[in-house]
Length: 153
Image (cartoon, rainbow, N blue to C red; front, side, top):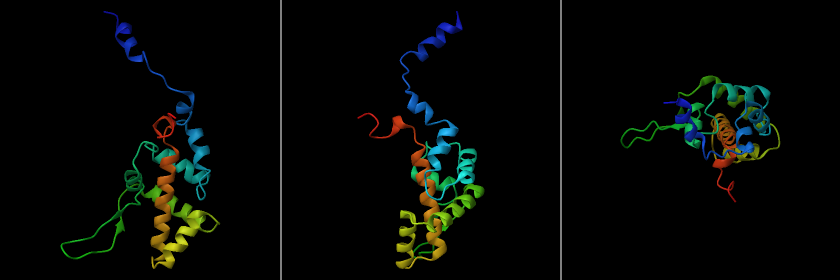
């Protein structure tokens, strides 16, 4: 039996648009990521290199892989502080510096951080929150166009 005959039916009916394919190319991801305030060439390249899953993750999973997800330190009736743990340390460090850059400019992230500090959050905690938002935005931007809810309309 010819193996080409067995493989051919798999490719029948596959319809992938050029936009969907372009969205997965590293150069396209780089261009899209650099549009986010706070993400420059170094952070963009680091995200693409160290987080190949970018674009296929949920919000929580993206934050966890970047080491920016808050974990509870609770036991019984005791409610402890939240802390970040695990993930990819290089990504966490780069995104933290991106958050520092983002809050120094007039961006919505800077306004959100200012509001968090005004509500009583510690300054470093609010910077980690901004870094988490950067990771989530990067993941959302890199999602393939076909998976977005408005792509079929």
